[in-house]
Amino acid sequence: MEFSVKSGSPVKQRSACVVVGVFEPRRLSPAAESLDEASGGHLSALLRRGDIEGHIGQTLLLHHVPKVLAERVLLVGCGKEREVGDKEYQRIVSAAVTHLNDTGSMECADYLTEISVKGRDLHWKVRNTVEVTRGALHRTDQLKSQKDDLRRPLRKLTLMVPKRSDLPNGEAAVREGEAIAEGVMLAKSLGDLPGNICTPTYLAKQARAMAKKYTPLKVSVLEKAQMEKLGMGALLSVSAGSSEAPKFIIAEYKGGKTKEKPIVLVGKGITFDTGGISIKPSATMDEMKYDMCGAASVLGTLTACAELQLKCNVIGLVPSCDNMPSGEATKPGDIVTSMSGQTIEVLNTDAEGRLILCDALTYSERFDPDVVVDIATLTGACIVALGHHASAVMGNHPPLVHELLNAGKTSGDRAWELPLWNEYDEQLKSNFADIPNIGSGRDAGSITAGCFLARFTKKYHWAHLDIAGTAWVSGAKKGATGRPVPLLTQFLIDRCKTKSTSKK
Image 1 (cartoon, one colour):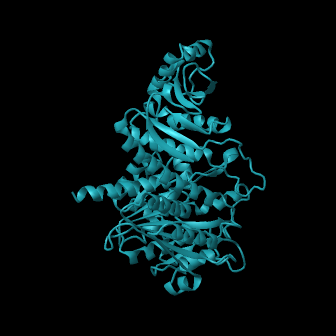
Image 2 (cartoon, rainbow, N blue to C red):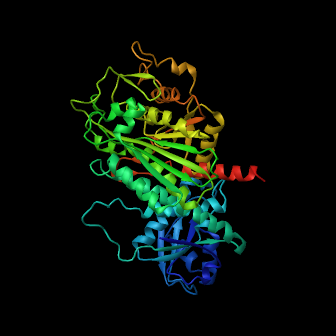
Image 3 (cartoon, rainbow, N blue to C red):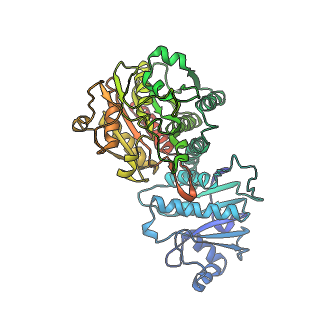
């Protein structure tokens, strides 16, 4: 898919299609008004006839509009003009792209960027259009023997900006959008793969392939024997029941100065989670292939980072294994020793994510990090608290938490802070070990999981993203979302800008 930026009148675009908006009730956008005036009222006549009302997502494709150079004009419903927010704009763009892709318009000039979106500027609209377009065209048929190949799919989208002076800003937005979309697509593709293909070994192979593609990226992988030597007893307790070898992936992106402290991203990489001996119910257990979406988001963010050539140092850590029941599996009541030396009573083997993360968080110390952010599909309780709209954020450093929240607002990949107060830590007590792997009772399950992780992050600034509700969708449109790659990439972009500004 090719994206470009251009300025000019919709009447003069020699394109397969020009895309313009229609607001409720049957009111043309400025670009549509230009076409209407040139065509002698052709569009307004259709509106008077009731061919399109302007509801969000409505589309009407017109051929050979008089006095217009484009072969087609696509009218897209935009709803009420003053009520277009982030999600409404994304629905508008998605509807337009889907229609274009299905109707043979291989390239088009898109004037939807002129729509006013509450609190958003041109840069955001252009970047978001690129991201949404790539998402709308994404297919989950990579393992199907018969694919639905379109004869004339959409191949080129020209994003129109008001003035020539807007071109540099628009081009920068396209670059960001393409980089983020590339990272999101990788995270989606990895997430959607089944557990018999996307194993810890497969994830390691994909990380090594990234290192071959991007020069600033270096990848190394710790094997089981090395993890044993390091004392990663918590991580290895989770992999004990599986025939798949665990892997600990270390991906180092060096875009900043040599002595500059790195940002460490830690992604939970459980490539399939049965729950272990504390086995999950069978309904929707197939979706536990998505328990590695934290790992996928780290690899996706590093991809976006490399595509943008960001001037910062980022390290991605991916502890990866299966959680399976067998004669060798860890049992409820077993006590294991983490890399930090803290002992953990495993009261529930389905609370395994925090066990692999705690050793990775301890391993993070050796990089003398600026900050550490872990990303995990950690708790079903997070879905109860926030649903599927926002990821949860917790941390031991309020400025870092606020950075992530602001990155979520800017990118549209929203997050919400949950408290990490000492009162919740009281639920983590064991008679037999330093800490249990679950809190007492069902209350505040997401927060007590955060409190557990906080025990292993005393030596640096840390934040935790629980993406259990946002990493994938269920039902008829089942699939990975690629979140929170947009949030994390924006977080890195913002950090690079802040660093650049502070040097001036």
